Length: 222
Image (tube, rainbow, N blue to C red; front, side, top):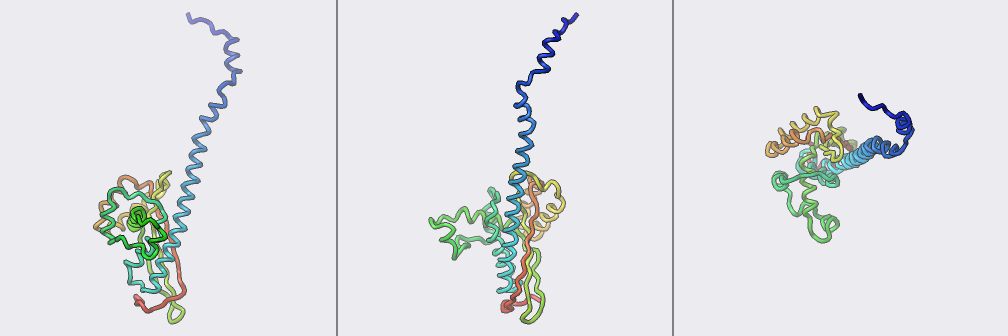
């Protein structure tokens, strides 16, 4: 037969509060960390949204001066504005750089301000990553005469480094990647790799800008 349990011992164990604080910390700490990571990730995404709006504005300025047909220059202006979003590029840097024809002089005349020491390797990698992930979706001219305006919309594939926020919307991200593959067949394997390995860590951030002034001397595109 099993030995009888000493009831005073049970009462002492029941009343014992040692380790209570540690147990509460173990239960609450993961929740606090998750909330902290969520706040940080949303802050990063908001910063990317601000830069996406600025990228649309920069692209609209180019479109207003050069015309909506200057697609390469409009894309370059949007990507330049989005170099402030840190994105991993990995070993595909030179492939992306060659595709978008990125050179050492891509940042003139602001190169001395960006890197007074002359080393532009970090900025070039970020510029290549921005070109890989940004797409000018729409350039539209409206109005006539002196009242013409140009509107530019850009979409950016933002990589969530802390939390997989794209889990909620994997469908639109996958469709966006498919569009990038069709528009840039030379980089299709990179986009396919993003879909297969990091799909749920990406979300689409869009920016839009309209400039009321339209120069009209670069071709109206109509």
